[in-house]
Length: 332
Image (cartoon, rainbow, N blue to C red; front, top):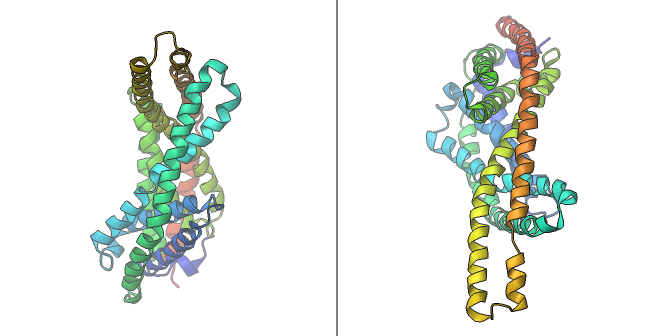
């Protein structure tokens, strides 16, 4: 059963305590960014900020009285600023998995793409390491200052408020899952929206999960679905990146050939070598691998949903929410 100590506390107080907790987690991760060996620091920072942002958005009723819109928007901007580095990390990891399958004629394209991604990641990390810790410290100080001025109030119990938020969020998640299995010709966008809805739902659930019977199992069920949808989204992002990169690679190759043609004889070995150095085969191979993986994952996701995994999770969640509602209305 849900522990009364959390469910019956004033919702506004619990929201503020959670905000402090997420800020502390983000501060610890931001401090770790200075260590180049800490490969999880950026991930942990992003997770803490996403949880904070989701908390502020879900409980805006209790937040807007002490945190102005400008500071809430700043949290969003700071989190968004880390997105490119995270996407690049994922893309490099996927490229490394393909390394053993690359044929000799595909290697120029593979190496060109890997070099492009590694350079961008290095630039992103340098920028984040130089600017992110100070930017977050300033934001953290301003938000903490607001929190320190707040006193406990007579808002409704956190259990009651969270139960209502969970019901609304679960219904949104259900609608988005139905779109994924529907034949509306927009499966990728449906998966993207379902992933976002699932993430919001999980961030609402996580603070109370440990105090609900089988609450941790609910989080695991939701994360399993999210991980699958997350990989599909990562492929969508990388496919767009690969399309843009192919245009850049083609332009670079043409400039290289023109420059050499202007200075070398037509039969010069360097010019012949440049003609053979074609990135297109490697980039096309990567595109095919992405397409095949995308189709496989979409089939898996739709099969899971058609077999009732989404409905089972939502039924399981509804039971937990009903208990949360009951405890939230129990007298202290």
